[in-house]
Length: 215
Image (spheres, rainbow, N blue to C red):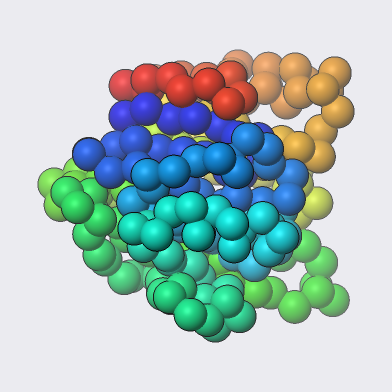
């Protein structure tokens, strides 16, 4: 597969003949001119994952893209947006997509929990070649090849992220959701993930706005 990171949680995946964009949000950059998408997948409604100011133009520039989101976001957007519940499976060309998880991580007990659909991308035989969990620490039963790892968030401690990385135990982990970190602080977090990942997991930082092959 080829991955391009457009900052924060926005990830372009070229996998099994399909091109899919995750979470074009307000902290992301460079996705505005993308064309030729087969699908846009949104994990949840927060603006850092779904930028309602720039999203309409992206959709207009990609008339052939299927539009999928968690149930609450799909209801908010309406139109051609389809809701993806935990347990749903569908195909985009030869790419199998599985919805999983279902809820956003708890930010604070006083803040209502919203929908968050985590996505597994792959094939019928290898359904989790890539996982984008959105804002959740959901551990799937499937073996994950590449994990987009939430690296820093108001709902996340570094110890929790390390435990999640170990629990999923992917072959490769790439950091997302890092926009809230100062540039000079990323090394603290990335160093811990590199040193404390499970044996057999490679932690790999993607260069922003540059496509790279991930095996």
